[in-house]
Length: 254
Image (cartoon, rainbow, N blue to C red; front, side, top):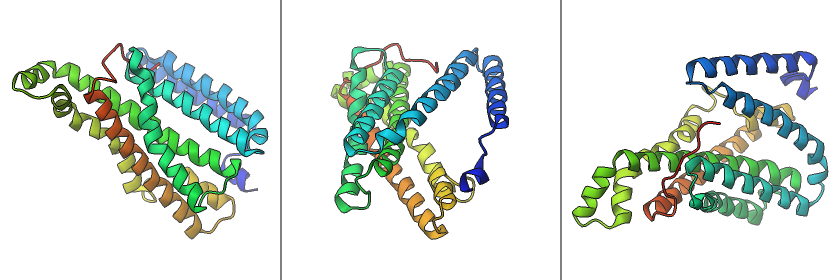
């Protein structure tokens, strides 16, 4: 009954998804310099991946070990996605460090305090939210930092000529640009309840939780994401400053 109140799974829902995807492809292809195929591929991949997850999730959450393996799979995919978004160079695997730095302490804290039950049905969604936030922050911060270094290459060389260490010269030029990667998380937190009602809040209400319980859980999610993404951005900056995440042929939107 609760699920039906949100979006009933009927042929009409499938048709609506197809129409919206077609519209997105047309708009992106016409107005975003030919990125329609990227939108189409993303939509098709989402459909296939969600179908696959729907088939295996009931089996995965039945065991803590299989749930842990599933979380590791999510982490590996996030590292590859973020790393390839930042650079095509050999250092893309360093993207795992900022993601892990943000996510692991929060998950350990939740499990150690008992706030997160050691059950797959609890661990997988929370880990997915945190890994997704860290992925976004890592991708944005890395791309913006390296783009800024490419744009301001002359200023970096001037700083080196003045006696700056290479790390300090790079950070001086790219820190501000990379810091803007936190803006989406800040905006989401500032406007929650006024502009958007996030999924965790709505899902708990539909599941029978009280508004206070739903609000408390959503507040935790938002604050945890701020912590995770802030940590990820700081680590990305350090990696860029040390030249471990170096400029390469950055991936496009595809």
